[in-house]
Length: 318
Image 1 (cartoon, helix red, strand yellow):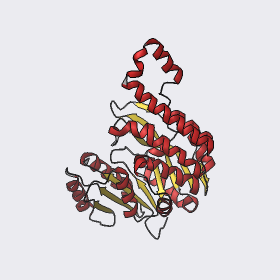
Image 2: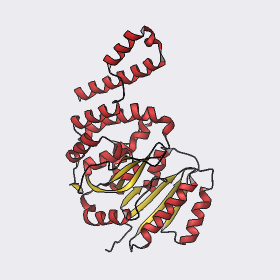
Image 3: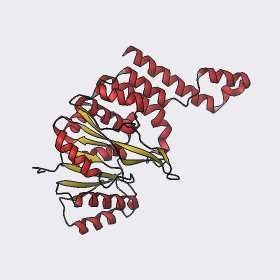
Image 4: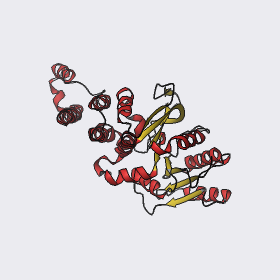
């Protein structure tokens, strides 16, 4: 295969995780070393205060190729999502693969992705990778295969029906997981310009971006599990409740305007709130303890339940 320009940018956003970054750069180098392909590695350091710079300098000297590996350092920490968006801008290839600095990836994954690009780049806005979900606590397998499919899926040019079906059966977790998505850089920058991120749902923006690209521009799903999504060690774990119960549900409503079916969105909303007590459960608790109304647990439930009903009304009248 011959390419006029770079076909793929492996973009690794990182912050104070030098040990993880060192391993991920090693993976990236090994994955591309035997391929006669124009693939670049882009490191976006979000103003780390550990020895991230030392790790990057080590690899740059070892490779000795400024076109192969590029290192960018932000003057201040701009947050995960904005650092990812900077990575997309700094990349120069046709497709960009945003890679979490601690996500385990199969050594053959790059070659597989490049083959898909070679065959389907003209009508594909993004390539979606199947993956396992494993525990960051004890390495146990939580979900052996996120998408229960045996063959690759392909929906060229306009994938909203295909995406709606995926979401209806598997929810949005795969699109929230940045390492599971390889995106067309030009189409991505155009999408971001049309649909810029909003501060109150910033951490859910990758989901909106990935689903939006796939639904409006075409998707190729690789059925083989080539990536591990490690649970319980997210960089935004301190904001998990806000992201899970506010940012993702609010973002789901916006997806309807991009062609995602109401049925799929309703399924995903139910998934987000599946662990919230029903009104009947609360009535039962109050009957057992009249003071339950005064507990912080009740206030937390009421906020989530009311927000869920508000979103349902929005869906009804869209």
